[in-house]
Image 1 (cartoon, rainbow, N blue to C red):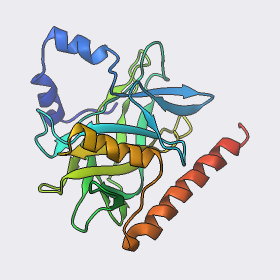
Image 2: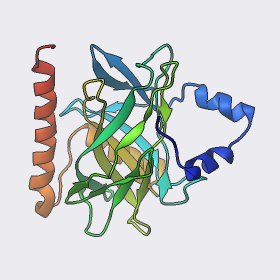
Image 3: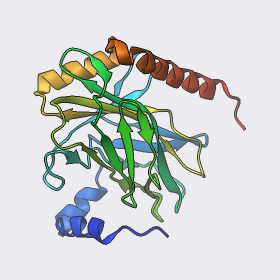
Image 4: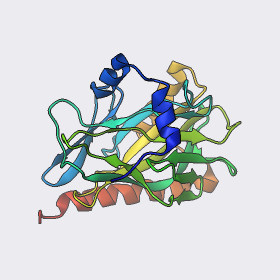
Length: 240
């Protein structure tokens, strides 16, 4: 069975107390809801937004929190909610897709050279997104489903220290040897924008009205089209 590192357990220890333990078991409105239908992982949640051009879910968080400092966050979490259950003992992983995009207050474009968005997994291995693409970590493990069929895990998202103010966007999907992969989804992370400014960034992504810089426009559009085609093929594939 997978074991979390001492560092992760120390972070949990800082939150010790029966009230906190109970809170971890509760449904969190901002978390990504994980379930399974007809053998495929499905995603939902109470704060999900939808990209019009692809139908992909969009989730959001701020790159700053109490335990990870001003450049990182472990939100949102990923959890089974309500009466949803997965197969006990199943390992749930993730796959990084596309490249790192950046909202400068006017448009979405490829992130500047030297800027990285890291996702640290259950085993503290880092997958790294840049404006050129994604480098997968030695592992890409979200976590393991409990004996009761519940899942509640957190990845750690972090951006290069000193990164420009704006919003950062990456694309992932969940995977498992026991289930078909989820549809791709976007994670949009706020780095210092006001609430209205961050909302404008998400609306631009939802409406697919992004206008990348000329140097990155081709790659950005090819990536969006490829992900949309992948999703269409998955939906048209007859069940096994």
